[in-house]
Image (cartoon, rainbow, N blue to C red; front, side):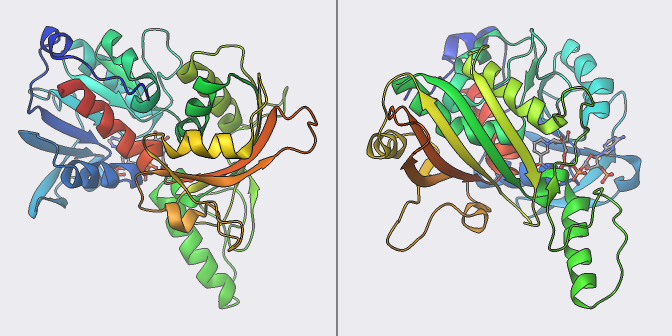
Length: 352
Ligand SMILES: NC(=O)c1ccc[n+]([C@@H]2O[C@H](COP(=O)([O-])OP(=O)(O)OC[C@H]3O[C@@H](n4cnc5c(N)ncnc54)[C@H](OP(=O)(O)O)[C@@H]3O)[C@@H](O)[C@H]2O)c1
């Protein structure tokens, strides 16, 4: 597998310190909390960690390596002396601060959708297109969670047998909408079970024992929601396949954490379930869960808290008698591979 690694020379050319000072913007949020956890768990060689959030959180603390780190309010001077800033505070915060920080010499890895499709901003999943990191201008985008998780399964297959068309449906967890949505799932479920009324505050519809079309804005012309638009265009950019045909339906389900994606993939040449399983067995960051006898396949509970993406339920798509199409199920923790872990992996590539 072609996992790109920046060579020493190009890292030196951009003066990336081997133990950089790191800032996390949005350190109190769902992704920010996981960023702190990933840096710690992976032993990231940082020299200093700065935690930033809104003024609401200023003065609170978060644990890192057994110490309490005080959270500061984000402001115009926050990035002085910061080598790498991991942004996870939403698009408007990124738009206000990220480009300026990048211009002032901080390498920004941004989790929001603000810059993902900008031509001068690489959109990177290291296992797929880490080579793009050789061309950044201090601003690197982390993909949408559905795109990041899906591409982990699609790319190794695509390298062996070009994908012509993808049809997918997602089962997306509360955590994808942030810490407040996870809390809404918890309290609304409790209220439902106790027979109390609950008025949705974060998501647009009742969440307990329900599911609904993804809460991102719907394009009135096309009928696609924002998540579907982002996932399709970002997959095309990451895979460098601008004409890849993708049809996707994104749905929010009452699961705390980890997205599941049902895919049907049409290849240029025939592809059997056994071939696909073998290809993905060898892929980095992918685990196979595919036990037909036990009826055990990828589940969000198995994917939660797990770095790897799990793939299984390989079967021929019977609607395509040519043998070119397969169906499969993919599950991944979108707070990890779909956000924090991928961002930290990018930072690791930069210091290598
Ligand atoms: N959740 C996911 O699975 C996922 C996946 C991929 C990408 N993303 C993206 O990552 C970003 C964060 O998502 P999230 O799910 O972690 O959201 P979240 O749980 O709602 O957290 C938002 C964070 O942003 C901070 N924040 C809000 N307004 C701010 C401001 N004006 N200045 C400084 N900090 C501010 C919040 O701080 P306070 O606590 O002080 O309010 C909090 O730390 C979003 O752009 C999202 O689209 C999320």
